Length: 333
Image 1 (spheres, rainbow, N blue to C red):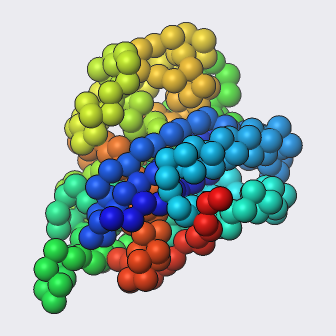
Image 2: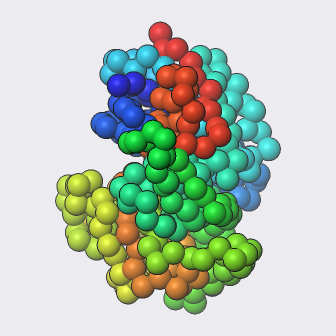
Image 3: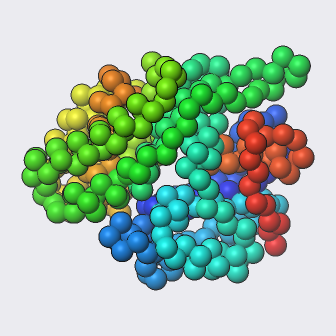
């Protein structure tokens, strides 16, 4: 069994996973999530602010200490949409490198592939459409796991189509939904923008069929389940693989729009720091459901961190990963 630490820095959230991986599958994972809002103001300025960069660096310092104390011998660090978009990402990468990391800004196609790899562990060889709904982008991937007949118990990854769409909770919020309470016509405009972007991306998939099973991961998706059930405290075991019908997503969108941000923050099932962007996130997922024609989505607690842990462990063990990508690993001291 191989233990690895993985740090992923997104537009809204920075996350740590310390995972034990055996036979190419995650056997145990401890996760920590912190809302750092790296992408705050990025859509308008094109830059990561000094304040946002400082928040992320402080968070990563704490994560490295946690990972070392948890006995992880190696660590990797990826950055996604906000770092891809910002003109000054190098400043943050330099700060992270000073901490001994080898930070990597990964392409949307890699992000989508890692997420699919992590999510698909729970679905055998079933064909899936996996959506990673983030703060700055949503990654869509269609594919399935495949069995390796020459190595029983092993598997591969067959991806028919992967696409990163620049639609996410913070991007929708800053473009359309910054004011709260939010008028219905403004919500409709944000939702229509997201639907058009998803529909355009899906139209480019060629002859690849859209599977019947839509699995959505990310902070908005898990919060939707918690809000719908009024969870307090949050229970990841309840949320994981929960099915949520489209009508429930649309009902929550309608319910939250007339509320102020402080009122949204008081609802059971939502982190207070997520309240400023939750309406944008729900509008994005509502639009995704319409664009795909899905009547429900399955919500997964598994995500990019699971796929990243699998690839990191494969690199440590010197064996091929399910797809041709290796993270930059460093020894924790």
